[in-house]
Image (cartoon, rainbow, N blue to C red; front, side, top):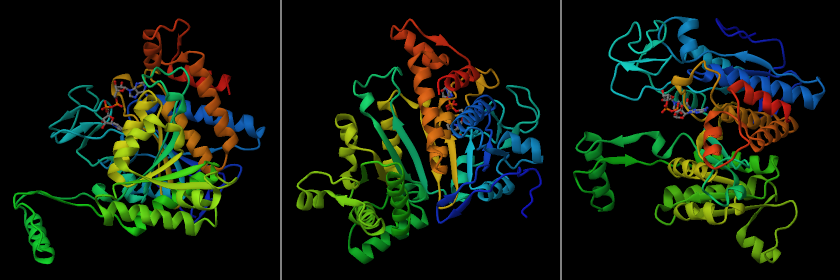
Length: 449
Ligand code: NAD
């Protein structure tokens, strides 16, 4: 029996994972990290919506047993000290396997300290100069989100992109956008092998390249190393393919810049094809086979595996969005594409997300802590609610997930929305908008699911 100091594992069924295939009982224990700032508002609303959907779709047979896990401000308050991501939090997430989190403060400036209540940064500990609170100032630390990804090896960053009718958006084909982006989370530029011009490492690499290949690199260059491995690429594409299989989606697209970088980006695509065509029986059909063997008509029950050059995909998702359902990308391309894609459906407000590893998955609100609104029951809980939809899909509770999505769609369509969407909808001329609070939006979703 595993025991923790502050985390209490509630009675219920621990989720088991056999190489990523989950076994989920009727009362699964699910971790919940409240988050800083507006985490206090959005996280409980999400829990209430999920509980209602599970209750409705199972007739009371199923219930999530939430397990609070402490990071950020809550970690300082619970454990004392200054560690914002205690090992116990990481261990507890690994133990329960599935968790959902609110946003966490991340220091960005040069200051030595940051306040986890209001994100103010300053040069001393003790009380916060801005909000005056005395229990939230921590010494500078690395992002909790990055820490979780690295320490739990959550190698796939997953971002579903879809439009909700009624969301103000300049893109006239927004309603055709409905795809999921799988971005590699651990290598490529994220590996951080970046060396300053003139440093020993940069100069040694320039020298080595000259010696071994005869090629010249300007001596005043900064040098970045971009590793893309077979292991990292294959496990990412495997997740993307499995998602397409589980969710009955028609295609997986490998996005790369292999026309220029053959052995990193190009290999990513090649290894991706290997995974799709060798590890999933005969579920996947390549574009070549589609024409050679099936006369261009997709056979029933099959999934198309294709690839696109990274620059062209930015056009394709605008001009032919309905041709894409799952996209798998190395880290940097995935970073750019995720941001560009979310703009196609009206911006970040409602975008959900997850970071998924082999056995462990953490679902998350994708916006920040918006500290000026914390504790006011005002902000939009849509991102974390839709992240919970992903979590329910991941657990195989698709019916509850669909109910919530339907509830969110109906609440927006009816104009029962928080201030952010209300303001935009009114400015577009809608006259039937009812501005609701954060918890009010949760209730509007529950009433409509
Ligand atoms: P932010 O996302 O907190 O705020 C940007 C703007 O969006 C603000 O105007 C804010 O009021 C608004 N906003 C954000 N979420 C909203 C919601 N749910 N409903 C309505 N409006 C919302 O970004 P920021 O101000 O740059 O960052 C604040 C803090 O959050 C920083 O410490 C930053 O590092 C951190 N952050 C965390 C995450 C994360 O944990 N995933 C992501 C981004 C930023």
